[in-house]
Image (tube, rainbow, N blue to C red):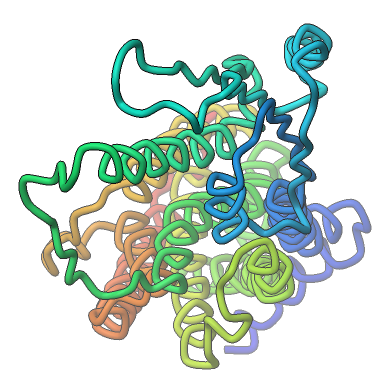
Length: 388
């Protein structure tokens, strides 16, 4: 055990005493997650608070009452303009400096249902995506206004009514679904990137420089060497996982501030489950990188081998995050996939979140034991360890 601790301390000192590695491995993952999600929260909040302008020609009191009943007038400016200013406001819309122009014809309210029907004109810029929401809302107000006037002129024009008895949407669950699609992918990417920055150097790098060969001919057991290497790398990578966890914890309030969700949307149990997944996933990632690094003959070769695995991990994370179907329990036997799915289940308030978390964490720990055994066998192989 003393030899394991010696190897552990050697690797720990190598990283901790290198300020660049400390920043890259420990601080950067959490910092990036915090910055990205804080930026997203600010962007979402700004998009909701955009002040939108609508100009209306020959506005009627009934239409004014309709949109005032549904709109937050703190975020929208509706003005009445003369027909002579239509050209000016069309140009503003073309320049994306104005959102919407609605033109009611003169004597609109005097129409009695006989003869040519009046035409209400809507003018907006289809290329300005920031105004599409308000354009759609006011278009719906016009349709509602049209139906109301049609009923007044022609009687009840509805053949049947639709009574929507669906429950009120759960804003928190909707936000959780979105979070479950976005966050797992970034977390896995940063965890893998952090482990990549230390794993190949710790084994393949020493193998290339010949220092690993020196260790192998010392009285230290190779099983102790394997154990010390993987435990030290796991401990350092766990700091990266904790950094990511803190980044998530600190950025969620900022991200949710850009929504209508309750700020207490996630409780202590959710953060605890996330932490369990991060820790167990770190063990898996470190194990994979350690085995690849032991097989490689140089640091460059190890990096070349690890990169496709990293890309595959990203693809699995993306595909899994945006999958709407809840996987079967048997699918949790696959590493990385189970972690992404578990994070998605936690963030989206799935009833099976605890089940997924426990199974995935246990499966990942089993993989860690297997990886340690494989690495031990590789360290005992002269052909692999002394390959040039």
